[in-house]
Image 1: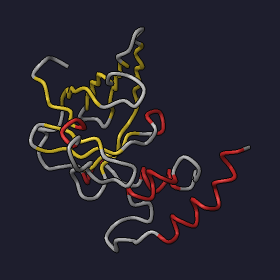
Image 2: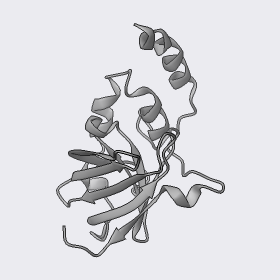
Image 3: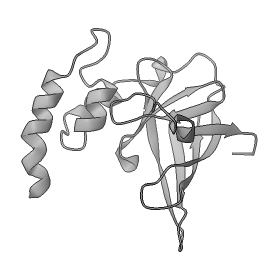
Image 4: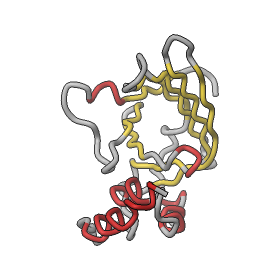
Length: 161
C-alpha cells in the first residue's frame, strides 16, 4: 500500500512539468518518473513508431559498458538493438557473488530521434544514441553530468550479434 501513497504527488508533479509543444503528452521526463504508476502513459509511449527512428541504420548492434551501481562494484551491461525494434539487455551485477539479469523486449524511438525507451520489461529506461555509443539517461531524460558522466556510456562493439 505504501507506494500508492505517492501516486497523487507524482500525478501532480507530472501535470506541472513543462511541456514541449512538439512532444507527445508523455514526454520522456514525465514518462520515466510517472509511467510505473500511471498505466495511461503506455499507449502514448508506443505511439512513437519506428518511423521516427534515425535515418541510417548505424544504431543497430551491440553496446557494452560497466554502469555505476550504488550497492556493488558496477553493472556490466550489454544492450543489443535490432532493426525490428527489439532489444536484448544483459546486466551482470559485479559483487562477491555476481548475478546476471537478461531482459528482452521492444523499444520505441522518442523525440528527438536519438532518444529511445525500453519497454516495461526493462523499467521503461531512456537512452540517447549517437556516434557509436549510448548514454543511459537520468530519471528526467537528461544525460548525467559531472565527474561521473562518462560512466553512463555504453560503447558500440564490433562483435557479432
